[in-house]
Amino acid sequence: MPKFLTLDDFNFKDKVAIVRVDFNSPIDPKTKKILDDTRIRAHGQTTIKELMEKGAKVVILAHQGRPGEPDFTPLKQHAEILSKVLKKPVKYVDDIFGEKAQKAIKELKSGEVLVLENVRMYPKERDKGTPEEHAKTEFIQKLAPLADVFVNDAFSAAHRAHVSIVGFTAVLPSAAGRIMERELKSLSKVLENPEKPCIFILGGAKADDSLEISKYVLDNAIADDVLTGGVVGQVFLAAKDVDLGEPNMNFLKEKELTSLIPGIKELIKKYSDKVKTPKDVAVEVNGERKEVLVEELPTRYPIFDIGTKTVEKYKGIVKDAKSIVVSGPLGVFEKADFSYGTREILGAIANSKAFSLAGGGHTVAALKEFGLKDKISYVSIAGGALTEFLMGKKLPGVAALEKAAARRS
Image 1: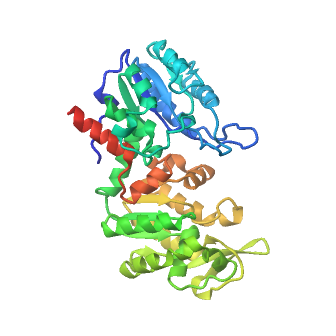
Image 2: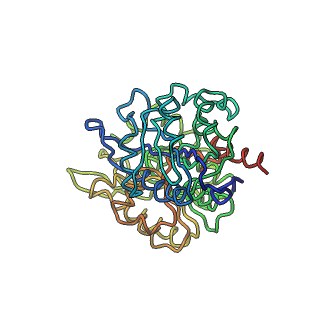
């Protein structure tokens, strides 16, 4: 478990707290309206609310999209949504660290919240660097003197060594917010000393990430079994020299997928009893679901789900597990006929007594779709940061908090 300070370690009464959150949300490309306020709600109901109640003057930093992308927008509507979440007025200025922003910070009263402009409108925000290097930027130099403490609550952006993520930690007392704290505690629970048996269920389309996660959790004896499905399951089957048939093999011949096959072959050879692949799959024939055993492949129809035999096999493993990590759906759950595999496996996890952790945008969407989100022990709101943490990588945002804590002790 990383060693960092939390909100419990500071007195926030009348103090200016710069809080880096992750408000990055899906945006309708036409209307530019936010489609899902999950992240804004999560930060608002925990860290921001607590800081307000403790009498802090709360200054919010966040990003939305990337320059040049359709979802790159100002944070005005984010502030409006936050105001509804908090049921209190939230101030907003279209400035990051200029005179308008500085004036607004100086005028803040205890318990008030101010949202500054999208930090990615600062051209150097996405430059990679150390906390000490970023601390020399105009961004940090202008805002840090106005603040008493920095709170990083953006776990889902902690894999970025960006200015607003690590820069303040070099010059201000720094703490993890409640979202950051919960994410790290939950992840540490399944990575450092998980209750056994521990299983990882990897689906979705990111076979490269799944390979890296599988290698890490198996090489370090974290997972007892890795269960695959979705495109990941298909790539793993292809690595076992299973001919999936057209059009599935055409898709798997894409350069980035083909390059993974040698690594997956090596993994399966090393952990043949621990890496589980589908026993059967579901294909779409004339608009209907049909199940095919793996030994009956190839098929000339597209594979959209795992089959009944695979579901029963996986559910048996889930039933005996004490720790479960699931990332990615097991099929195209958005299609009613092919939601079976994902729904059944997520349902088994939800009804299990094991500690369960779910992450990834499509996984969370599936949990919501099936009404199972509240039955999972911990649902991560992170994407890339979660994946990198599960690979055993050190996240710059977390490392910066650890370094700041060490300096203070």
